[in-house]
Amino acid sequence: MKPIWIVDDDQSIRFVLEKALLREHLPTRSFSNSRDVLAALSTAADDEGPQILVSDIRMPGGSGLELLEKVKSKYPGLPVIIMTAFSDLDSAVSAFQGGAFEYLPKPFDLPKAVELIRRAVEESQREEVAEERLTETPEMLGQAPAMQDVFRAIGRLSQSNVTVMITGESGSGKELVARALHKHSPRANGPFVAINTAAIPKDLLESELFGHERGAFTGAQTMRRGRFEQADGGTLFLDEIGDMPFELQTRLLRVLSDGHFYRVGGHSAVKSNVRVIAATHQDLEQRVKDGVFREDLFHRLNVIRLRLPALRERKEDVSMLTRHFLQQSAKQLGVEPKRISDAALGWLESFAFPGNVRQLENICHWLTVMAPAQVIEPKDLPPEVGVGRTASAADVLLPKAGAAVLPVGLTAIATHADHVLPADIAADVALPLPVAHGPLEGWEAELETEAVALLGAGRLDVWDALTRRFESRLILAALANTKGRRIEAAHKLGIGRNTITRKIQELGLE
Image 1 (cartoon, rainbow, N blue to C red):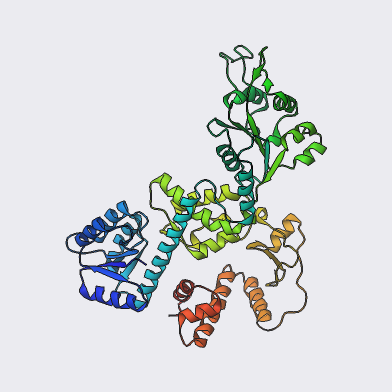
Image 2: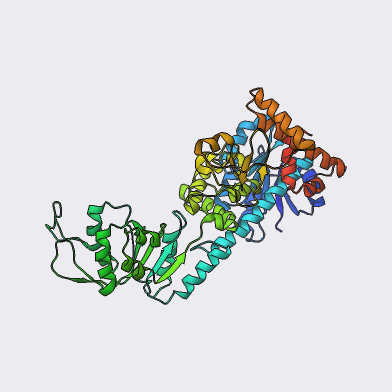
């Protein structure tokens, strides 16, 4: 591991931090001023630079904020911790705005300082791995088995011109798959033209697809080439094909059959050599049965079908996608990429994402702008993810067989993943809720009794009040069992050491 660089004009601070970090087997390198740091950075090779930088804010010959700005311009991904006195909290705000990972107030508690530095090291190492993965897979991301099946299918189709039908929910990335099929096909040097058949008014769609001659209709001042002509020699992607008007389906079938079509108002057939890839989120078989989609067109399009999994079916990809979108958003906005904590990632991984990958991308854009610190915590996530809020009826997921049913009040609350369906919402949407079986005993019965009493008293903080007490007793019991050893206590509770440290502070258990 690369060393942790410590910058402070106070020799005692440097000495204390060096000894504490060495006890944790963390290598260090110390500097007394920012000039020496910049000189060392200018001559250091990539593998000789710092893992993280810990700098005082007030030093002769250049402040920590100036050093932060210069370091970030050269190493935008390097975590920087700014040490500051309590009277310098305004400077701490400036540090965050300059891209600091965190600030450490002086005088600091040494174990807390070491814990913060170790967290920064872990984040740095995690980001390095994430960046390597993103470099290896810049086109499409996915390690889940379902996505690997998609990648294998793209590989098998790489030398084919066969028509492909991509199915999947809205926002799952169907156009990305279509672009990948084009990029790895013999037509890669030709154009890729996409059209969403559901987004164009019915009266204009025919002209968009096939073009029109001058004077074909009011406003047709010049001849216009349609998408089929624009895609000649390449690939035409027809998104949301299930919404195409029935009368246009006949014309599309004719083009797919012999490659010839007529512009609107035209009398001469136009020949176009186009590979068609179609996509839909609808059940085309059912639309055929309903008489709104031609069966012969369905079979013409459905030569090879690729099903794209929903994001909730590939939870293991949420972490990689989140970091990718955070880096992408930061690059677009010209800011320092935000990092995300394991706890916040846990919330995202348990969210159902009805809007799929597109919704996750939008959330990452939102976090890049709205999250107050460089490290995203659960409290920073938008309300739609479900942190600290009551679910709306739109978020409801009925539990599968065997899903947990938690009796915590007068009525049962059904849970599936982290989606909660309170009884009042259940009544509004007329959905059946499972009922808990058997009487409650012990602490669960006492918990229910107290919850009912607090609810009956009109309290609006019942969740927070009882949760704090519950967490406090768990942590105190674990610390008593381990004789105060926090890391061991965290391990026995099944939580991270960062989590137990934060909880001890939040719950006032110091």
